[in-house]
Image 1 (spheres, rainbow, N blue to C red):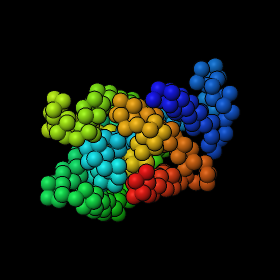
Image 2 (tube, rainbow, N blue to C red):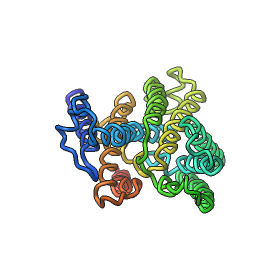
Image 3 (cartoon, rainbow, N blue to C red):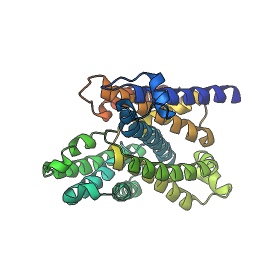
Image 4 (cartoon, helix red, strand yellow):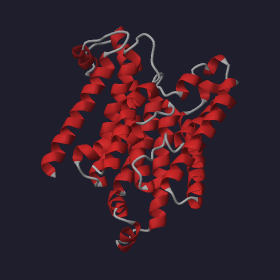
Length: 334
């Protein structure tokens, strides 16, 4: 196990660092990696390139890494909760619920858009995520089939998305002209205040998730086994859903809903490590999510530059084939 685990984590760490440097170097203004390193080391002085890196690209790259890791970790926890690898914040409608509440806050406070704090955005997204989760759990109490529950989650997501589109219809004020773009997923316009708020929220949630790794491992072996090992099933399930909702809400609050990452990345982490042990999958999912979202963000803003493609378009191109392969593999028993 160790002979495979160490190389995988080394490759993931190297990939995150490389994608981080690419995020800083590539854009409408291309900056050599050597110059990027000089700017990060504080040796470049006050130049246009330094302002571009420190004020625009660095917060964006950090947010892509933080939120990408949060989204993948949220997906893994939801898959553990529902015992289904197709479960994820986007598929189950949790991201759509968070999106609706953030859009509502932006519309209500349109005249005070510059005064909306990052914490208010996170709180609004969390309330929407919990509303969607509550509806899914209510549906779960009525249906036994996991397939039916997933379909119910998709329908709940459609309902929240319809309400969001209705709100966007009336959001014509100049202060929120980017609301529609945000609703399709984007890391543009990130600020240092947002980075600090996201890092604190995601950091605390990720640490809490890591401390749940042993109960998660027992839970994956069956509820009866977990209970025999002293796991309080009700408290554990509440903790799982709260932490995953906080993570997905934080992502939606800052970047909008991002598709497929929460499903595909945990699957790839499990396949890479060839294990389902949460103590390994949690950090592997986080690093993989950071890597994937940074690379997708680079593609989104450079492939048709200066036009920026919606982030969810790029993540769907990456994630949908992975999910299809996952379904085929489960069907064939591999």
